[in-house]
Image (cartoon, rainbow, N blue to C red; front, side, top):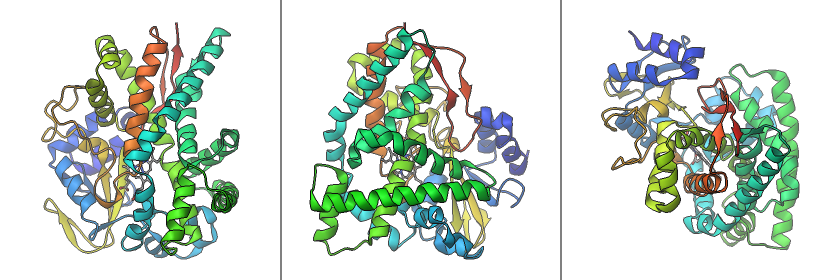
Length: 410
Ligand code: HEM
């Protein structure tokens, strides 16, 4: 079978429901393969072997993220949309040298120490959400783990990180969701873009006001530290650059983390001995969260465009072509992980590629892992009889997760 046919299956309803059999077929073709542009998206090649994916993501001179220069090739019309100009000003959609200049500042403020300091707040957020779920369940109403817990937790955590007051989060969530919905659409519609532009303008204004307020009255939060570092270092970043990356922080840490929590819970509940084990063994808890992140990655693929004629493991990739980078497949590469389709928390070196690699490696990886390590044991301890009802997947390949995950608590 050729890569074109496998990818057509992967992006079909069957592949969206369970991509893993398609990844096995791709691995049988080697670490990368040529595909016909236009058959499944714009891609001219697919890369799915772990080592090859890692190499592509680290070679940022050849394989670039889609940036403003790339978008300009299709015309300048996109520049009229604040949603797009904002996204294209973020570290996720810029290449060297702007990427390094902007990322340095955010790397300086989103440290491992800050994540550790945030842990008591994350624990409080989890406890409050569990209280809410227990109350809802007591009224004999069905509880949906996605809507009633996983959707709320990551936004509260990023809110606590940035210093956004709890009372503003209900204003934020639907607006962040609107941007996610726009990005999720395969065929981008003009109406959705117009609605997204409107919420983007509101969020930009919110952050502009927040920055001015923290400059005048600093607090112990990331935005205050950001302003201090920025002012001390002679404004290496413009205000729009800072604000755009704050918008990104919320979006990048939202659905990815919702899905990590949603994908992980059933894996734990199907394994009562493991579920009990992680309550008393912190090392087991750490590898268990990392194995959840490997086994059922919440972000299944990313893409790169090719800056100069190159090859990926013998597959020619001409300048200007697009490469589909299948993180979810690399995580199941039998050359990297023996018995890759087994969920095995005792793997000696579980480190996955779910957070990417190289210069764009996820800035929130430590935070996301901490969220998993705090949430799962707390949930299992508080609700020892937690059980899952009829779950529904979200019918997406990109952001793999559950749309609904009904649970009973007792
Ligand atoms: C399980 C949860 C998460 C997953 C699976 C995930 C995955 C990823 C991946 C694969 C990338 C690289 C994209 C690329 O190379 O094109 C990335 C980048 C990024 N992530 Fe995450 N992420 C998660 C959670 C978070 C959280 C909680 C935050 C922030 C609070 C965050 C912030 C970012 C940012 C800012 C970038 C852009 C980095 C850059 O381009 O330099 N992520 N993430």
